[in-house]
Image (tube, rainbow over all chains, first blue to last red; front, top):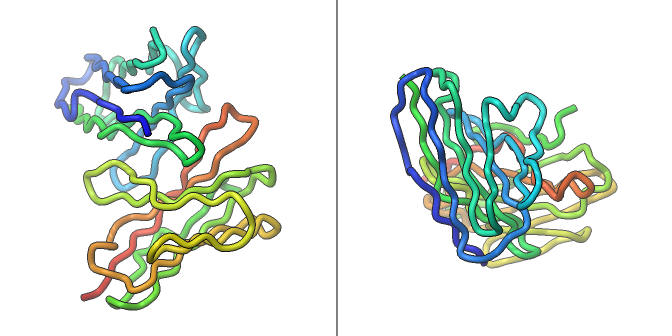
Length: 113
Length: 112
C-alpha cells in the first residue's frame, strides 16, 4: 500500500498568514483527498484533488481559502490562506489503498494565534 | 439526516469483554464500508473493511454489514486496554468521486 510523507507535522502561525502543507506519495495515485479534523471532531473532507484538473471542493470550503495544487500523480499541496484561529485543526491527506479503504498521511497540526 | 452516524460515546467496556460499535449510513448505493481506529494525536488507521452483507472476521475484530438496514457494526472480542481509542466508521460514496465520508467516531474506553 502507498506510503505518504506529509509535512510540516505541526506549525504555529500568525493570523492573516498562509501555510502550505505538502503530501508526497511513494506511488502514483489518481485521486488524493484533503481532510480537516477540528479538535475533538471527526474528519471532514475539504476537497478531492485529481491530477490535471481543478480540485473539487466540498460544501463550505472554497478555493480562495484552501487552494490545492496537484502537479503530478505523487504530490499535492493544500494551502490554508488568510488564517484565523478557527482554522486551528489537524489537516490530513489521504489516498486510496487499493480496494481496502484509504491510507492517511501523519497529519499537520496547525495552531493559529 | 447525517450521511454517517455513530454514537459519540464514551463507551466503557471491561477488559476481556466484547465491545460493540455501531454505525448507520444514509446513502443506499454505498458499496464499501470501513472501520478506522484513531489514537489521540495520531492519524486514523484502517482496521477493517467490508463490502458484502454478513460478517467478516479478522483476529479479534468482526465487522457486520446489513445493507437493507443501512447498518454496519464492529465487534472487538477480548477487549484490551490498548483498544482504547476513537473508532471511526467510514462509507465510500460511489458516484461521488469515490470519496469516503466519516462518522463522528465513538470513543471506546477499556477498563482494566
